[in-house]
Image (cartoon, rainbow, N blue to C red):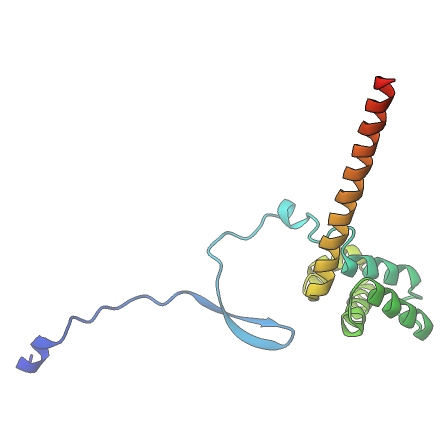
Length: 158
């Protein structure tokens, strides 16, 4: 050991975090592995999308209008219009249609595509409109409840 090495701080080795290669939509990326255990079969069977999620609604509509494993051009256009009314872009609507078609080619229904459908991004406008709709619904129900209470009070005072 040389004398100039004694002034150096001791070298500390740290174990790097575990990493794995994941591929999402064709782009490889390094992601940290989740230290939590994998979900059990019962947990993974639970629905990940709500019944009012626009991706799920469009997937079910797509499965209803499919002829075999294909969607006709007229049906596709109406599905894209329906998706736009629900807040999905044409690209997102086509992606949902493609996922449902792929599941049909494999002999599966749209209920098996929930995990794939959850990868289709929801725009912030869609999420905001859902919140806005929920607030209006609460406000209307509250107004109706107050009007009902007012009618009861008026009838009791007579």
